[in-house]
View 1 (cartoon, rainbow over the protein chains, first blue to last red):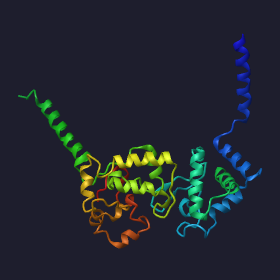
View 2 (cartoon, rainbow over the protein chains, first blue to last red):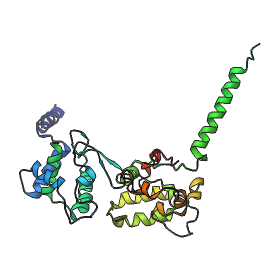
View 3 (cartoon, chains in turn red, blue):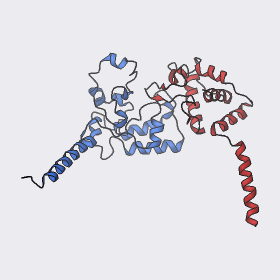
View 4 (cartoon, chains in turn yellow, brown):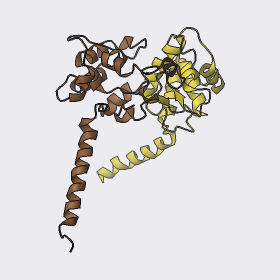
Length: 133
Length: 163
């Protein structure tokens, strides 16, 4: 009987938390939102970030599309010839589900393209953009 | 009259032939370089470029390279310490001058003792093997860089670098 008193609240808690259970992408967005002190990200701003040319980074990679390609649903190619899976979640559903990997590539790619790390706001906008693609 | 041992003889001959072909494919081919088998090394070294076979460079080259990942051919490719160490161990253990790498020792021919070359494409043997490739082929849009082995060696990912 005493055991039941422990188990039942446990089950109730599990069911309740199920309602707010979010995937790793949503968790990431929530983290970026908290860090950027914002409540909304914009896919349109994300798209601009993705397609515009920067001059602060390396000359051979002026924009995200240099390697990822102009079509978010198509494969990209690194400068050394490696195929990059499409950035669009609709085509590559496994993307952005490993937070460490997402952070690793934001750091590396933003440094190469923009010449600096991306802000949480930029990351949230970009992620919102590719999730909707 | 049929020889009752004929099926056995055919079987033995087939087996011997297969063994011969397999042995050649596995070791006898001087254009074979065992591809990276470790999933972490494959992921970390094979996202931007082909995960080059560790046997293509001597151990001291890999040690130097892994110590300078923040300046990796113009990119900052640094990793956390644990991953860096794990990858270094794999590369060193399978390096071209590690024991049992018969064929890559030929590939490392001409590399000065104690030297730690960083570019596979600057090894004397690499240069001589590619001397007949014309300039326009290197500039082809599907090639772009000498590090893009797969552009010409279609089975490079599997370790085969035949013409």
